[in-house]
Picture 1 (spheres, each protein chain N blue to C red):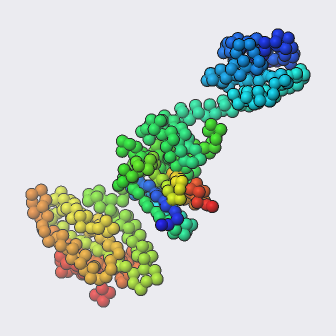
Picture 2: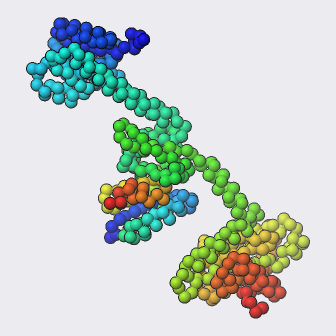
Picture 3: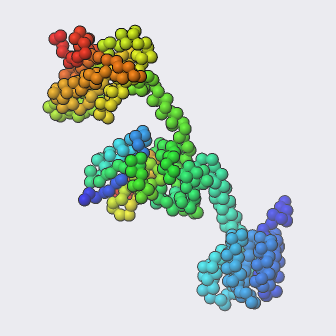
Length: 415
Length: 90
């Protein structure tokens, strides 16, 4: 059985004592609790003190009329959701009803009205109110959840403008809520459920976030909820691990894994670039081996040897275009990849340039050390069309260069 | 002047930025018949431009022509979704 407190309470505002009492009895018979007021001020006082579920408000009241009472209830943010039904006599034209609705009334009744109809209309209005309350509660719960979430949450409208950002999102973007609302962030899209984004912060400390997008209703309008999780630290760690796995620790040059990958990609690009043309652009693979490294190690020690490798790496790095690759192939062996070379003449210029970096001695902690290198060169597509063959050819050419020392040789099958 | 004007904001050479460039280039070539001015702006190189355009995150794709402009942010690989969001699907 329902306790009294759970019964909906209805406030009847009417200056006609007889009508007020009749309405009251009919509703009490139907199981509702009632409150009564004969004028506007009393009505407002009761609304404030008792929060009735429904107000049946007569439009013709002494001093303060029903419209003004209605306006005051709706203007109070604490009580604006109170359900107010305008009650008018049949002699009053429909303009009054329309005016009431325009001022925020939730419905209207006209007198005379039979008890059965009155109760049925009240019941139906309370059902609508209950549904609206439930929806409001749900939206409030969603807002609370969003506001308190540790993930960043942005609400974005259908045109890509930000409607709301929770404190976590404001922090991620390093902007106050006022600086985000109305901003055209764009319609958020995450085709596979989630996607990575770079957030641009005014302080320059950009963050990487993983974004998920769901469609929601916000202020009764369709909108997007973009949930943002900061993955900056994880990404930086991943990037660092990938870098370490693909670079030589001593020289910081790409290692064997990375140069193989770069060469594969260079060959794919060259093959694609040559499609339908008479000539492919050339790719040169230069294998470079230091001639006197063992002697340097033996006479100056391994620490000096390491410095030599680093110094050679620095010189190689500084002479390359950004599209070229210099890598450490292991020991005192380096490999260079040059893409998009027009002809043999250019290859020879490049080979001379590489050899030229060994002309000047290296300065190692105040000590001058002369370093020499032998270079073997193979060319795509002349010597082969895959990585293994090109490296093998460059290796053979390098061994021929070794015989002369401090020189370069192009691969030639006859040799 | 080409019919469509697109501007893609990216951040450096991150993989999602490179992915976005490929997606948008394909979109221009295959679906907009190359009738499209596409510029790619790296916010690390041109931060002022990003500020002027109120770019908050990348990748952001702005369709600035025809007027009024529209923009999307995030994964640009869902072609029908991108076309619909930029109102290019009519």
